[in-house]
Image (tube, rainbow over the protein chains, first blue to last red):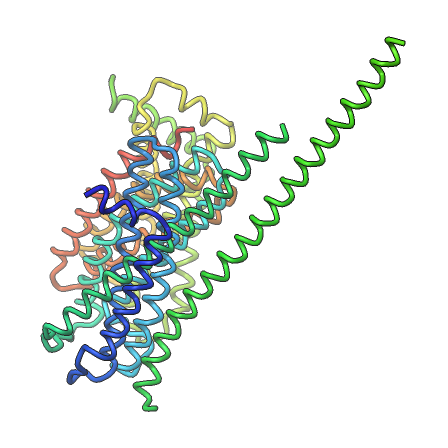
Length: 230
Length: 67
Length: 213
């Protein structure tokens, strides 16, 4: 198992995989999955939802690394947590934009407070934007790593709580809850969706590894400078 | 192109542009790293040359003392 | 009184005593909440519903809590006592609990003023609102005492605290406003209690990492 995963644990392997999968996913979205009664806007769904799920996954990964940092004191976990959350905000802003376009297509408005997923995302997005403000206003060091980690942990708890809160708020903000029970997905649609999901995960993984490589290279260069010139 | 098609295309465009922006940022970072590695190499080279010159000067001084 | 809770009480009483002596925070919070309510009178056009006023009451409470929370660690900071406090043989989480209790005491005192003023100026106050105030206060202060400690570590202390606290308190506002305006406040109150329990436990467990070097 470990041998099987090993090639995926580096930037090159993941980038290759992402390239392949994104290609297949896009082709499947447009040439394989049928256009249903929802119309063409359903094509947005094929990558909007995977992007949103990827964003949640990266936030979760960031929180996991934060926990590893606090618990095991593993060096480097802080940086990994930060990079994962950075990926999360990138995918998060993509979710907000593509979701907004989808809302415009489907309901004719760029923003719908009735669309719970979008509102939840906005809350989470605001929360994680503050993560960067917080991190960059503290001097680098163990204190910053700890505080960032605690904040990242609060994030994963805030996600389900906010989800519940937004559900609850619907009752007094929009008394008539409108359901969006779309048609059931056909097998070919679900297959396409799954491929798109895996493709987005691979893309996020590749970007995560890439950014991490850059950051580590930075640190190593600084170490090297001190070693050579001291 | 129908307006629906335009919206779908726009949504894809946004994702595409965002990822390319990421490429730009990584490219900027690589450029900076490239420059810094170059500077470090220059610094090291200058230091080595300085040491070599210092050794040579010390060697001459030693010879002078012997004679 | 000895042990963990003895420490908590000692620390909280210390903060309350300091406040009673210096009177830095409480009058400011009370004045702030009264001014805010006056502003709301002019911000609400005639014909606005009681529900709108209730919503604004919650904004007033949230911002007043924020004002008080920026001062949470002010006594230690001004006298550079925080390191001393950390070196004392007190469990770190006891410091958090004491700060939460002190902040709660301040907030509750100011809310007596605020709710009286609200009742006088705007609308009737029901029992569900009072329950919501009590539950929301716990959540606000528990999370607030933790993020205020984060904010003291940052360069932009006063600036970053609202940014840290507001996204975290959106669920509190949902529960509180829901309990104030809905016909069936029960589930909103239960939600608030759940928030208090969950975030209380996390804040209690993680505080030592926030203050540790």
